View 1 (cartoon, rainbow, N blue to C red):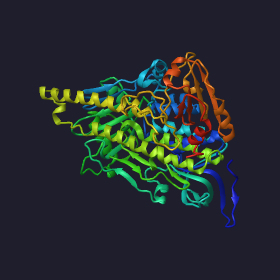
View 2 (tube, rainbow, N blue to C red):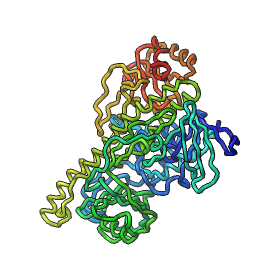
View 3 (cartoon, rainbow, N blue to C red):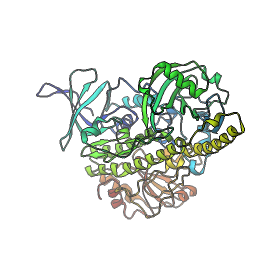
View 4 (cartoon, helix red, strand yellow):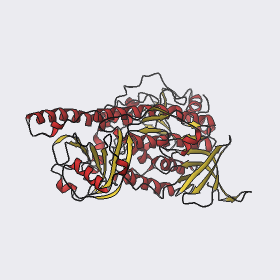
Length: 563
């Protein structure tokens, strides 16, 4: 439990907490939502007055939705953002009122909950992706995080200092508007405090990777407008979409619908020599009109600049009792929508390990597996995002593309082919979404089976230890994932029940919360290719095998109790 404020000898207020989290974005809030149900006290501080006002990230991938489902609020997230019947297509145009060049059609929120029950192959999953602005997701995550009595979520508070004392972390926090500093004694500290992370800087951790990648689009400075324009849809001569991409020689841009009615997140490429940092609202309207191809009235809710062209991963994710996660640990160009989703999985991976150590169920060394598992995934995902950005950003839009002439038609045919191929490369990515693996992790008991190819547009289901468990819909209509225990699950599969009591006994001795789930269905047994399968709290296959003969050693390995 979070201890009440106490007075120290120096007269300052002090708090004691299990985990101090700097940053109240999706990563920090997800940590609180994972730690709260486990009874681990968590203090989240963020200097902003509240959750995000600007839309920021706009796509929640299917794996993230499966984690929200595990926590019990995926249905709430899917009800946010666009109306249930609004298309989630991604469409490409010369200008929004000009020629349509390409479109990938994707299910509406209402269709997603129905279609997922019959989808097979790469998209066999408990959830489909959802197109929703981060501002709505953060508000929901905050509400659920604050519902746990062991959580203390403080917006308008800044982390001012930190020091790893060996057995604990000492830190000071202070209201962002000024006021008395509060001393915090935490068992662990997590910096989920964004690209300019105070925590990463304090630890002296440098970036690795590349930045400053220049492209005609999605490389270099971008100009963002959060706008309201009820006149946009009536002016659009094409079927409405979720994301609108403008491809022309004058101004490349993309625009995501925020509410499906009048609010949009608009982002335009800034050309060399343009001083977008000092652009006025008149400039913003000009740039918007260049992408639309017409003067459409709009209200500016906010505007500013940001940099695309990052593919950066911190060289370390941990120093002692201090960790970094989310944008503090990796920076993406936002193609594929991978930054926010990778941040959520950082939190999912780290939280159960922190809880296990705090509760005395695992040694401190278990936490070394966080960097061992998540840093390679960050490098993988930033690599995919860079590939997607190259695909769209290096495509040259020539002036002839908009001509009403045979030359113009020929240019458009080239663009149509390239952009249709690109749309499927970037937005139909079950391989990226589900295919991340922790092969080589010290807490994965591998069985020697080779992993499938890691391709963005294809996912091959495998129960090979180190990856996401294969999904199946059961005969009674339930998702297999809904049967998994909140902590450790032992799947006992097949018509003949394989003896497994040794796992349950070993778990009791080691203080591990393990439940067995018995499923006789031959199809599930065939899917997992083993009668016994151990599933981690973050829904990763830790081990599979034919018998329970090495149960104690296996549990010791996968919980970090034995190297």
